[in-house]
Image 1 (cartoon, rainbow, N blue to C red):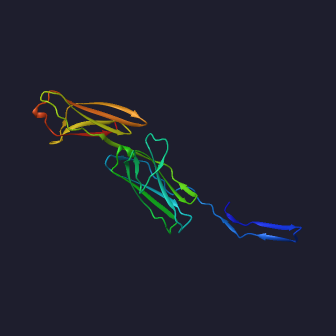
Image 2 (image 1 turned 180 degrees about the horizontal axis):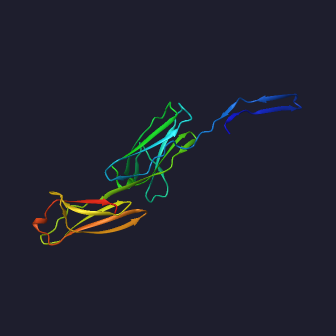
Image 3 (image 1 turned 90 degrees about the horizontal axis):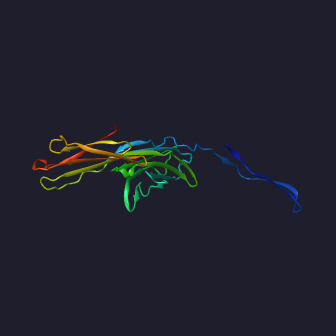
Length: 233
């Protein structure tokens, strides 16, 4: 328990005929609450957008330098890995999470606040984020926050087809639920055609595929198209 401790010893033997007592200097044991003041919160983000995680810790060692480490465990990963640099994650040489951390390494207050902002979110940024503050071998770890990402993971591509032929446009979305995919005329935003949809789930991620087929393509079908996805029921 928290208190002030000291060590006492007594020496009395053939080499010291007079009993002598020794005392160490006082040692103060302080118990700190090894829990964050605020854990990062789970959230849902959309492709191309951004999201900010906030975490707060008590600071029992005011004025001392500390280290903040954010970690990331992607969907399907077996373990979490520390985010390198300022908060980035790379996979096969490509950056999949564009992170920016903000915190003060030498605070004079009794609270430490750190933020992690994820920019240009893609489906690869989905997963668990966790924060740890360290003072040497002493540390406090937050609970993990899950970032769910809803995005168009594969937009339709430019398609060329001979007159009278068949054109197909494909759009794929990923997220925590299936999507309803529609295709539109970019000139007037009118919905066009009927979309054939299918869904597949892997490691909790739902992939929806929508295919628009234009049969007997004519000059009137030579337009700019875009797809739209509505996630949920």
